[in-house]
Length: 447
Ligand code: CA
Image (cartoon, rainbow, N blue to C red):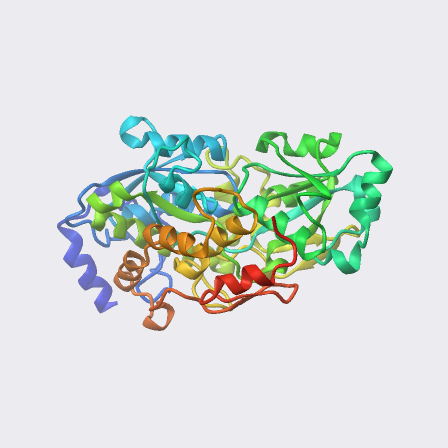
């Protein structure tokens, strides 16, 4: 208590009423990660001194990956550090990219939530008609919480994470019977969603460039599309797979957590120009994010998080869908076997591989290695050396470490290096970041 009074005294001269609304902030974590007291206790502004700029415009897509940004704004974690985050919903990944190219000064955004390797490829001009807009990857927003949903029309295929055992010959039989290929969709090409579906198929001995048709479907059309046969499978983040299962349109064939436990998913990335000009503000952004992620990961906060996210202001999605998804309550496989395992659900802070939020270069690099595997960006990323050079420019770990130290993350939870070490997938394939070429060579199906 003595320490707390001292903190209040220290900041009492600089309290800004708008940032210290009692009650609305809830319980932001203390320096030790514990709750800072009752919701009615006024929370001091932790630090707002000397920020180069006090606002940032970020974009988000209404899926679980955006939760740390939404919670950071809604519960005042960013404001606590003197930064006002203007968070705007993006109608699609393509619009987010276009708004990033515009920048906040041009009516767009400074950064936000991204599938990888979007920030690397925007930096290289590979998905922006050649216009290079350098970006910085600052933190991972979430791990797991994604999946591959399949339509009830293919229930007899018994699709699971391991297609080799559950569904041998299924995709060829489907083509023969239907006179067309099985269709698998995502909402943005050449990034996480497509990479997960390709990994899953190829691990099952199915060549995604031959045995199926891969297509892009706009997010609002996904539920209807699965109903009317636009596609048989869909790779995405929750709430969509849970919603498809809940509405009995389809089932969850595989979760990304089954494919690769504690895998890298989506990231916070911002224009380099903004970070270079405003390094202190970038650290403030990361401090609020880290606190939001710690808060989100606590089981006792899941219901409150679901309530906030489900509101019209944010996701506008039925509350039970988000409650189930946030708690890792899935109905798996064609039989819809209920399973509750938070360790296999979305992770925001802790994992069996340490802190999720830290932007390990070894993990952000993997998406470029997969891009080589599938020849996504010819002329830009064709070799491991090119991938490493691009990734080293775009992924930045030092600001995260500074922010973590300043909000009191224990030293044991702050990684010191750039590699999380070897990664093992469900099919036994190993990605050793020290030797990505060996990983590429080991993959039987590639383009
Ligand atoms: Ca995702």
